Image 1 (cartoon, rainbow, N blue to C red):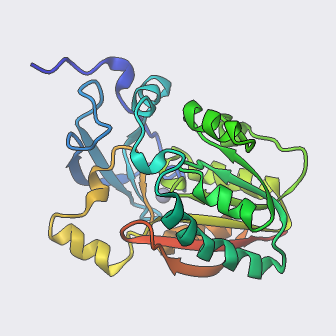
Image 2: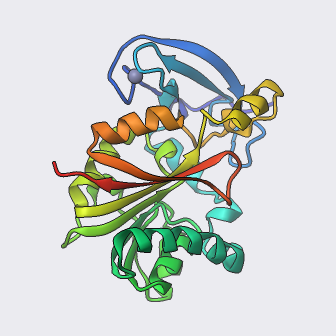
Length: 269
Ligand SMILES: [Zn+2]
């Protein structure tokens, strides 16, 4: 018999849309997440997805508190561990880093990677000449990078205040994990230099392949226990504009299924 769900592991219900603050939403799907590798019986067995009636954003009806996050992050997926497929990841990220270098006309500058996971983006950015710092919620990941002399912290992004303005902030497969993405994007705007660049990647719920996978019952993201949001490119671009960013570059991800990659420039406040 499975143990009963502990109250502290229940989701904290959103009282409004996390992007536009509208109150009204419509349930669109209940997804089972018990097959997810990070699932534990103490966590909710399903994700209840809703669509905001005002801005159409699709999100889970609630997010995890500290106790549930600690339980989730006690385990780590292989691709989130430093050292994961170093050579193929270095090659994949070099394409992104080279594009950012061309857009900045420089291979140097201060680069913050939020949620560095395997560390491959961070270490590739360093290889191209950037001064890098990483944030990750998993303390073991931070310890491993620190052991290689790389600056990394477990600080939450919203609490991170670097001494100088940053030239690049990357949030690779991170925004959909954050309960309140708009807050994070405003904070990124605050931390970036006037011509700074923001790199984002995440699945694209607007993509044709997303719809086909959903229709065929094989879209893995509905049962992704670590995600709170299914962004489409259209809604994400509107959010970026609201938070002071101009998207300049769009590409698909070579690393994750249905992934999109966006580079946006910080606009003056
Ligand atoms: Zn909304």
